Length: 91
Image 1 (cartoon, rainbow, N blue to C red):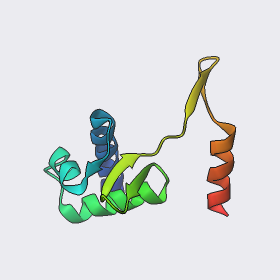
Image 2 (cartoon, rainbow, N blue to C red):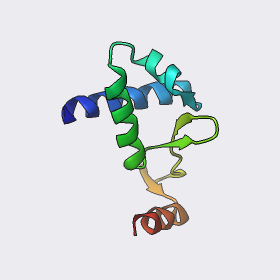
Image 3 (spheres, rainbow, N blue to C red):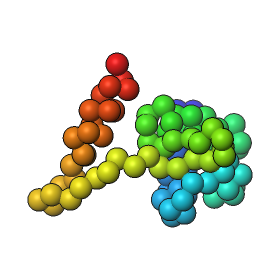
Image 4 (cartoon, rainbow, N blue to C red):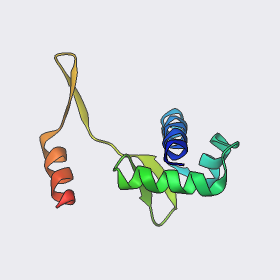
């Protein structure tokens, strides 16, 4: 079951990246129509818990979390302030 949730999570990230905007649950479900609703919900919760996406409680939309990546020497580096806030949220 865990592997299935990880696969669906990857599909959801692809749908969100393709859309380049926040999507509602119904829009995400339309992007992965072959998957059951309960597994899509579990996958969304896993993505939120891992900090990969965020949910807007007012509009009930989901979007990919912006880590403000900067390109330097052909490698991605996370903005220092963003990194500090991520660690602060963990503790």
